Amino acid sequence: MSHPTFNRRRFLQGIGASAALVSSGWAPHVLGGPPRKIGVALLGLGGYSTHQLAPALQLTQHCELRGIVTGSPEKVPQWQERYGIKDANVYSYENLHTIADNPDIDVVYVVTPPSLHKKYSVIAANAGKHVWCEKPMAMDEAECQAIIDACRKNKVKLSIGYRMHHEPNTQTVMRFAEEKPFGAIETVSSAAAYSGGENRSNDNWRMQRKMGGGAMYDMGVYALNGSRYAVGKEPLAVSARYEITHPDVFKYTDSTTHFTLEFPDEVVSECMTSFVKPGNYLRVNCAEGSYHLEPMSSYNGVQGAASDGRKLDKPIANQQARQMDDDSLSILQDKPVMVPGEEGLRDIRIVQAIFESAENDSKRIAL
Figure 1 (tube, one colour):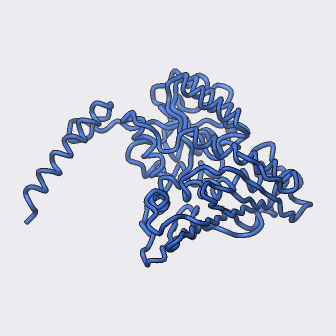
Figure 2 (figure 1 turned 180 degrees about the vertical axis):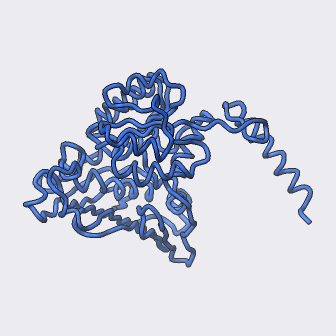
Figure 3 (figure 1 turned 135 degrees about the horizontal axis):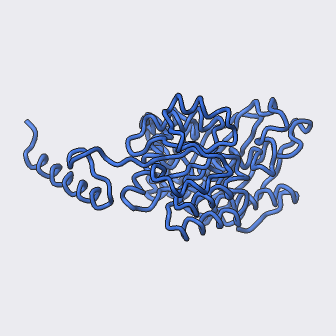
């Protein structure tokens, strides 16, 4: 038999939570009628939208796919047939501003190459829509700030697509940074890399620095952001170097970048990102033990362990679905997002310093 006090406490907690949701404009089933869901329009129908975000939106509880924005009209019929998207909810890049008149759409999720993030995030914000922007947030600090300013001016929420912040084992590492269960953090190492990128053609945007391609922009932000949340502080300086491989292929961007982050209290993080060699880990060494995630940035199977034997292996059904549900609840409940634009800006500021260091003989750059 269940304990009556426990049941009563849970009941009262549920009533309180329901009242909070009602005041935020979201009424659950138990209070009459279906809950309001956030309507999402995916802007950019490339691989990530096609293979990750759209399927994940079929698994979400608090949002749903209602619209698309594309520069490829030939893709529209397939998306409409598969996801039941109405004609009125199909947009091109040229008429995106007219989405302001569409009450079906609450959020525009910008999933283009990074060089276009600022342009379309600002248009979406000016149309009065909340903005979810994929990582890396933009090309430089000024572009990041322009997105932040546009969202603030229009009183819409901005969230950056750092899916790992929504992943439970990653959240444990973030908590360890605050609680320090193994004493003071001493060193960190992190890698976000894969092999096979040398097989891409030069006209692929990931092979073009000017479009936000290259190992550092595309993958390096995982190692960078991972180091920051593992330490729980901001780095004071950075030094970096390029490892030159396949120069006939990587003509316009980096194939492998190594960088060292210097944090307060003499904590150092050694990081690597690459398109031509594998690596997917986050390791933290402390005064009285250690812990790690490996893999640390895969779409599934993130796991790790600590030196005291505890496992970091909480399962999650779908990272992207969790991310979008969390971001939807921040809108429905009018609460702060988990990954605001300022977080994306901080990483891009460091990315720019990494490029400066690597292009100047590993010069130490104060941050």
